[in-house]
Image 1 (spheres, rainbow, N blue to C red):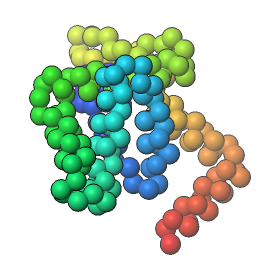
Image 2: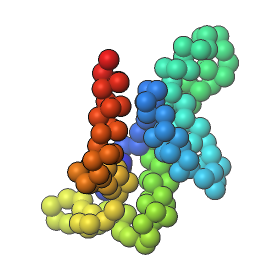
Image 3: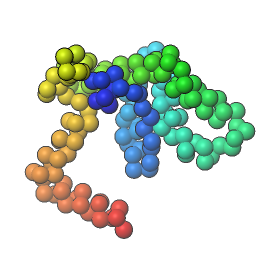
Image 4: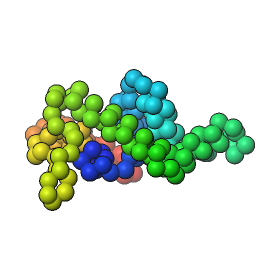
Length: 155
């Protein structure tokens, strides 16, 4: 996400393994469908992020599957559609950051050595990671609960 916002990097899909479902739902909820473009990009994001699951359930003759796959391929095959997907995704993430953290800088400012985002500007992943690490360090019950879950997953 940082690369998308700070360096005009590529937009992305979020491969949704079962344990990533909540994160996928949160990312998808950032699209508020305020425009037809945002609504369409949300659909592309949802399908692109779950393509393997969809493929397992649909057969190749399914027209909806063919249309979805065709739209995904077009999204990255053409500069215009790729730019549109990236632009809408940037707008959605920037809007979410401003909603959560107020009017902070979320667009890159150019410096002579490349793109730059003001130090201390809040970003979703970095802030979430920092708060989890802080809680793990300070809350022994939370730490024990996480370790217990980790042990269950490793069995």
